[in-house]
Image (cartoon, rainbow, N blue to C red; front, side, top):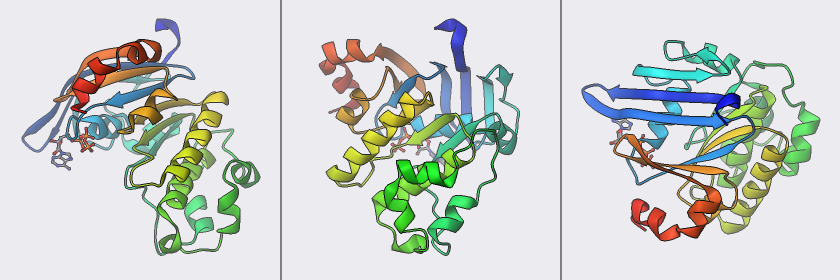
Length: 235
Ligand code: ATP
């Protein structure tokens, strides 16, 4: 595993103003792996994702992506290494229609999905191309947010709580979609509160507590000792 890490984080610290939120995060993710960050609210999962993407101004330590040290790089340069971030709030522009939202971010890397390919993965979006962002359901917004980063050519996907607030049938669809992306070789870091969703997709899991990694499991190990993990999550 150590040879093919596409992402390696060491001693990552981050601050919001005076508040020292991340206190030495260490994570590694192999090529094509799906890794989750699990933990209670406020543990620092979203902040870790934002640091990877260069969106937290005050951060120190090391984040090496595809062999490039990115800790001091601005977000747009980090994106060009092949990262795509889908934030929890999804970031769909309500004044724009689906087509405009899809075409908004620049293509950053070769091999970005063409619209036809995107519609194969997201059949619903084709019919909704001219719909305003505001008219979309939560599930459609989530699909659009993921489709948008696939078009840019990102190969490492950061998905922050993609199932948040969605109905079970839509969660199933997103589950199937993430499975297909994994099968296509995308490397994925997933923040997820839905334990079943996480454990039926992931290869490995990190437990985040008070801005640090306190435990690590591969998926089989976690399924053998669910109670230990559920205790961390306060479930
Ligand atoms: P959640 O599931 O609730 O989003 P999380 O594990 O993703 O939890 P973070 O959002 O990373 O946690 O938050 C970590 C800590 O940083 C929390 O104490 C939170 O209140 C604080 N925090 C998050 N964003 C900001 C901000 N913009 N300014 C100040 N403090 C923040």
